[in-house]
Image 1 (cartoon, rainbow, N blue to C red):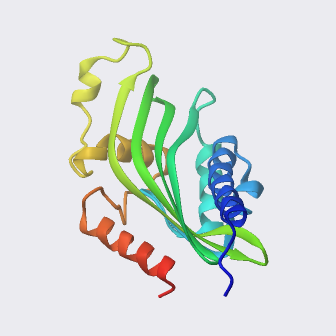
Image 2 (cartoon, rainbow, N blue to C red):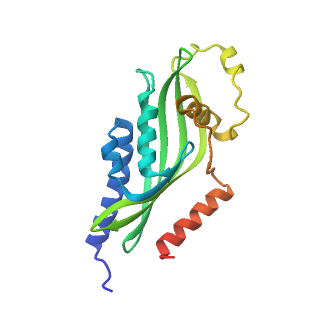
Image 3 (cartoon, rainbow, N blue to C red):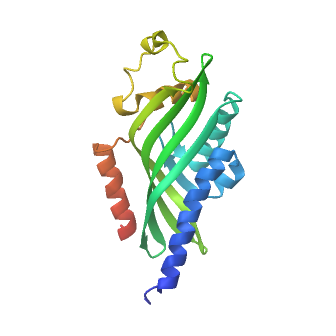
Length: 207
């Protein structure tokens, strides 16, 4: 087999990165048809609130966003991407900081969540798309949009004990927004992360 040229390697990496970046933009902008095109038909996604097919993820994301307060905002900020190529397979890993503005119980909050996304990608019929997406969570925070606008009694009334401590605010917001209790969470430095990284190694080795 002829080794790929530097130009082909650069082209493949660009197309993989562009597809992953575009998927985040489509989700934030509510372009559900565009989001669906970033994934192969048999792809699967695991996040803090979802574990299933990409088609189901698109539909449920649409339903969840349609129930948001008119003032709510959302941006997935991607950084430090790196792509590992292996023929028609690739792994694309990058950091994501999710910024969300939410109105809960009449109060405006700013939420932030730190995570790592791993996209396992494959080129089919000359096109790179995502086959598997998994998110590894690190930490979160919840702040009043206007400092001092939320009374301490509000925070004291919250029961966050059922959520993993590092991302308890993220899970609380998700359950309030979607009604979904967190499941299949992958936390940083956990056995689940180790398993996800073994899956990456197997994917790029062709196993």
